[in-house]
Image (cartoon, rainbow, N blue to C red; front, side, top):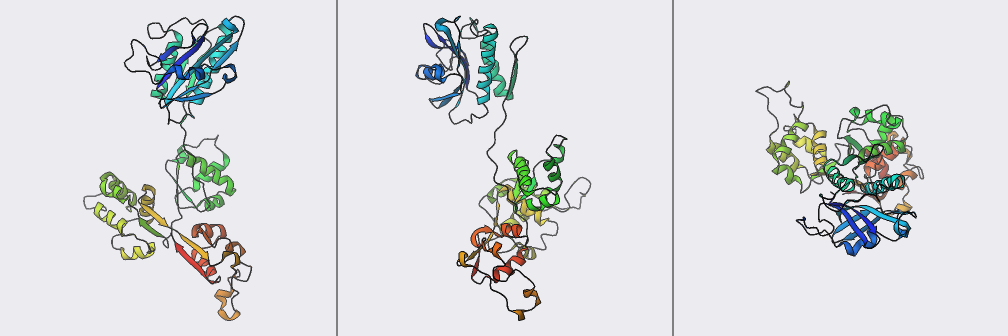
Length: 423
């Protein structure tokens, strides 16, 4: 949020001076101000109205836990005192605030008013003084910029018959996490409602296959799209919060609760949301009758708490079969992952010496099932060899080598001393 907007100018006799400030007294003391200035202007004035070398470029300076952002303008002409005019529209933010959205604001103000000054001396002919009583168009401009950007994140201010100031603050987001081939994207919005004819072709081909089940690699295959382009398209959606990345759901996987399970225990609204999401069929006005019953919060919490390290999901399902008759297990796990109170325990393969790991050639009399694997001859599993350093989870290995987990475990047995680690 913008703390203040002010316009300053270099005066021949007085030097750098604040001409207009909003709110009143935010930059320099004022008789009508109710709060002291945010910082001492005289301490930073040489950066607000700097030497010519620092003009016509973005300048930021911090003072008293505030960040001043400006774009000082220098215009040379014989019609001005000292043959020059220097002015600056500046905004003040918290020192820790993200300034990326505001750089364009001061840059646009500088370029617009340089143009207006060169065309009709708009800035130099303004004789208004600081404060609402003496404020003219420049004061009103500062006031409208502050109010509109803080309240609406945009402003459209007419300057004269030919010029209008249009500013919009676009939100900034942190870089999205990398999208990998073994990730499973789950949409958080109705993606089909956002699509139009101007969307990228790869994006339009990818969207129909995003269902919370298909991996990125499978989506690329189904969409007949290059994997790298598919990753870029999904990364774009991830940046704007349209997707959530999950692990590949498997009944052989292990899931366990985190300390964040207390959020579910203490939040009745989350418990109700969970019941709606995981119940089969989903309760609704057309399926609900006085005799229907849904999962109660105690049962839901108990089921989540019973997940534990070392127990594959399929074994857990067999133990709780009576309670799971109305539960979509995949959605049950997905809900916990999304809310952050479940985590996936991944499997990693570690060879005793990955550099020397070579598959053992099977004997010919071991049966057709082993001999038929084909990839177990010495040197035949070189692609698998690079994954035996404990840095690649089974999801990645299976996806990149196009193997099932059972096939992968069979191949790993041929390497002899390979440890399977869960973490």
